[in-house]
Length: 395
Image 1 (cartoon, rainbow, N blue to C red):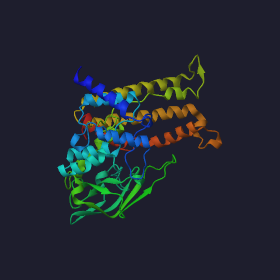
Image 2: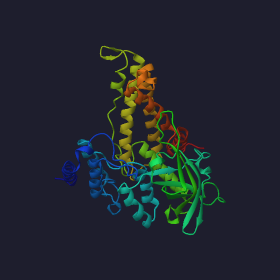
Image 3: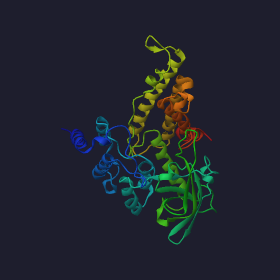
Image 4: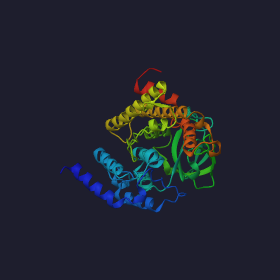
């Protein structure tokens, strides 16, 4: 028996014995926000994975991982999927800031923060965009002034997703305002459970409010929690964005279920609402549109797998923008197809108007997923990156 075959066999046995019934099925283990209490089986599963190092399987063992190589990681994900076990942790903790600390952090920062991430102890928000600095992020004005062994932070960040229940936030701040705008920025970690941090939810058309504005008024952060060095935040922050975009694209294997794909259920949903002839959709144009979307979905999944195979690190470089953008556009097209199929049934807001829960959920999803070509860098920003960094076109 080969080493990989032996690993698969031992992995399969361990999963069968240690994954409780309540941790099998759709969904993920929530990142450990201190405001969320896990279901008993989910808590047991999290603790078992922590012990095994499988919350962040590819991370070094000294930081709470299992140091799996790519072949072992793929086997682990395959075996988890076989029994429908909830996968390794995913989110800003293990997909964004964790890999960034692994790459740019000091030994002391790695030893202090990475085990916290690996154990899922605390949810993280992302403090990048500001009311006056979105796509032109380098124009940010949130200040951090050093006072002894800590920094005093003042300013505001917008679109800080899920900040209402986050425990920490990684923030781009201006530490040297006298320097050119790209050179005076630092990335610092901030505890959100303090009087100097206030979170205001931003209501959305979909009814949900994951987006927030976060205000810093004399918030305190230790000086030794600047990641990558003072005034190097632009370099560090851009790398973190590559991890983020890779996660959006499903190609980040730093700790999540990178490359794990779901069955395309759009065709069967559409067929519930349209006229059928000879067991096929009667509208030829809609049928063709659906076929193209299905082919694009399959091509996207293949591209995701290829990107994972080709990269030698936890996340690819600028090609992550390609996969992130095409993935977002394809998802939005699928939403449009479903809404077209539903007709007026898809635009009713409550059950009293005759819509089912499924139709209301589809409407909210359609509204929410308009944000996919904004979050993590707008479509226009991604196209610029692709043109310059992937295709090598001149400015």
